[in-house]
Length: 342
Image (cartoon, rainbow, N blue to C red; front, side, top):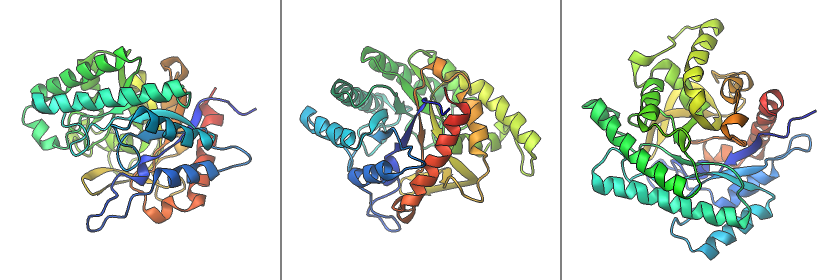
């Protein structure tokens, strides 16, 4: 018998991140179209249960009125989809700014979290959202800048995150910090763990594990001193390293992205040098998606996880517009749930 949980979600931001009107960029894909592609995916009668959602233009104005937000909620619900985790617009160029920055930058970061909590409340009251977290990161690409004074800069990010977590707690929300090699202070498994412990608010601020990004944690891409694997590894070495990493980060993990990675970095626009997301069936993929998911999903229900999300960030538009892409993704997510759900 198939498991009913966790619910299976698709991310909307692959239609936005790295897209734009600059040279070499492809145009964004609308929320409406991303919803259609998600709702149309089907494998043996099973469909996606919901979406995770980036709270910025052109999909959503973070200052949209309550009525406009309810219209969006109706649109999503009309596709028989729920809303899960929300991505706060914490980056420079959106609402926020660097969590490592001065008081003005920190203020912008916290404003972004406040706006995300307001939108979450509207969706919750509407009924389209019943679970999920609000995602953040340090919004600071300067890993080299962070290294100039690692202890002081980590302390500053932790201070920003504690203040953000207080805002979230006051609104009945939890924050998940996305581990990714491009974010200062979050660019290796060890630095991510140090930051989470420095914040010290596990009931409100936890970790979001993305399988594509955390693979590069293993390889120590931006922190060779923290590498757990070397090129040429075999399966035994891989799973020993994977267990070591997940044992440390899993207790903090409250949001989970199913993804594939080919061991390369990728970027487009301002979102540069990050883990390359690959199709679920990519022949160059380094991960056995179903097997690796087991390590993150152990005890997931006890940590309040009620859904998992596919992240196909940086996929080219032709791939995003191909319905078969989403059927293949849904198929592997169903397998993850059947093997490791509840």
